[in-house]
Amino acid sequence: MNTDERICSIALTLCPGIGHIGAKRLIDTAGSAAEVFRLRKELPKRFPGIIHASAVAALDCPEAFSRAEAEMEWAEKNRISCLTLGDERYPSRLRECEDAPAVLFFKGNADLNRLRVVSMVGTRHATEYGKQFCTEFLHDLSELCSDVLIVSGLAYGIDIHAHRGALANGLSTVAVLAHGLDRIYPAVHRKTAVDMLAEGGLLTEFLTDTNPDRHNFVSRNRIVAGMSDAVIVVESAAKGGSLITAELAEGYHRDCFALPGRATDEYSRGCNRLIRDNKAALINDAADFVKAMNWGRSTDRSSRMASGVQRSLFPELTEEEARVVKILSRNDLHINTLVVEANIPVNRMSALLFELEMKGMVKALVGGVYHLLA
Image 1 (spheres, rainbow, N blue to C red):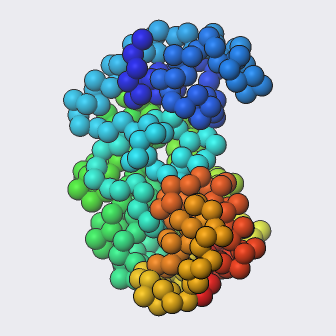
Image 2 (image 1 turned 90 degrees about the vertical axis):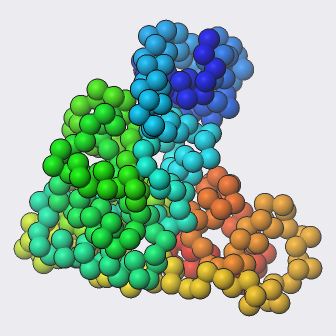
């Protein structure tokens, strides 16, 4: 049996009846995709109540390995990275989501674990109002926070304007695709996609020969939401994929923002509703956003904090708590950033931060940001 984790991860996604959540759960339980297949017949006994006998039959799928090997060969030939859940280059924020893809295909040079990641989404029928916001927001954001990664979906409208605005202002940008990397859809965005390879990249969970079908766009939206610190909905009608992304962001405990518009404007109705229902914070400009995310402060507070934190308290902290305190001594940080820097799962990080609050070591600020008390 092939033990290459990349091939095993691809094969797992091809086994009938497993699905996104099932694949992630199997890998988390067994430790790796290779172990899932190696222990296939023993899984129900080893993990009773977690893995059922039906999984054994589903994992007996030689055709899945044949396709996975062919896919891996194609990826290597075209210098495409295959990122498994255990790969350090896999987006750490996304890894914590229950339905995170078992494998991602990436072409480009972006750090998918950048300390600040923002997803910008919106209608395909962008108005001049929405386009102008993208242009001005990304220009100002590049001056306020030049180290931000911008994520979107390469679609018509707001998506492509977000990518182009990022490139124009020297920001790295990644497109999450609803098809394999053997094509670019829509084709008219090919030049932008090529430009992004030098200043970002293209990311997908889909294999080659996958059509950009409607349901694939819904599936890719969870990646757009899950790999970011915050989602900004620029324009949206009363119904649309951007609203799905916003709902996903809320479920993943990501910050969500929406650009308000006139009540009579068709492509502001979705944003206005998100704000009305308290599912998104109102955003006017980049300064608003940076303040809400608490990203505008100096990134080096170690000298000021050195005398403020009583080192004598550290022996009372667990190893993980001390690690979090050390990271926060540099700057106030969002919980998602702490998860990435400390390499601690988000559910565990939440518990640690609660304990540190109880010990009077940290304070929770607006927007999921934490501050180390002096």
